[in-house]
Structure formats: C-alpha cells, structure tokens
Image 1: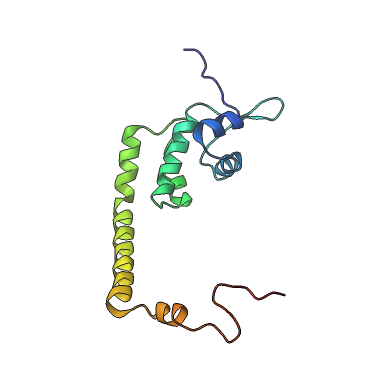
Image 2: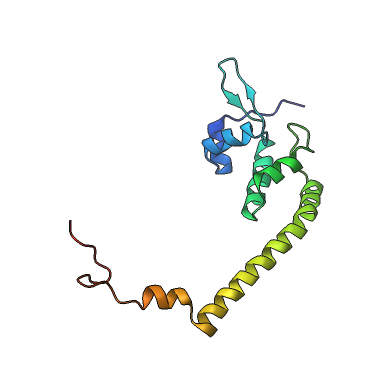
Length: 143
C-alpha cells in the first residue's frame, strides 16, 4: 500500500475551510495530530480531514470542544472517525442535545408570551420612552 499524501497546514485549511489558527488550536488541544518535517513544518495525514469534519459538526450542534476531545480520545491517533463512531457519539450526546433544545424552546415560548401576551417590558421602557430634551431619536450629539 503506497503511503498517503501528507497535507500542509495550508492544504488542510483550504480543504476543510477551517482557519490555520483554529487548526493549530485543535492540535494544542489534542483533537488533531501532525508530524513535523526536518524544517519543523507541520504535515497532516489525509484522515485528519474526517476528524475535522467531526469536530466542526459537533461544534455546530453546540457540543463543547472539551467533550469532543473526550470522545476523540477513544480513536487511535491518525484513525478517522467511522460511521459507527459517529453513531455512538451521537447517542452519547442525544440526551444533552434534547435537553438543550427543550431549554431553547422554553426561552422562545417565554419571549413570545412576553411580547405578544403581556407586552414586553423592555419594549415599553426602551422604545416607547421619549428622547431626552434637546436630542432627536437616532441622531448623535455633535462634539
């Protein structure tokens, strides 16, 4: 089996859409791994792209990086997440995500109730209050 092509940090950034600074951060956190050349440049295995996809997907649904790191610690270095791995991780996080969704729905319902049914106190206080004397709403005072 021929060796896989190693990616530079620029290649990895371009292909994953993740800034180089974030990739360095992920590496410091132990989420991804690189090898160094004799010139001390980072080289990443192509499988790192799948690890990054897993990290980004987890972040999009609100999973903290610390929890992502805990789950990725079960994968050997250089091994990409498999479908089975994704399924097990999603099972672990499902209850937390369901709880978060329920809290967000309660917040939305509370906000809707305040605005529609009671009239939002912030609306009455901020938007209905007349501007101070000598100042027109929406204009800044000249210095």
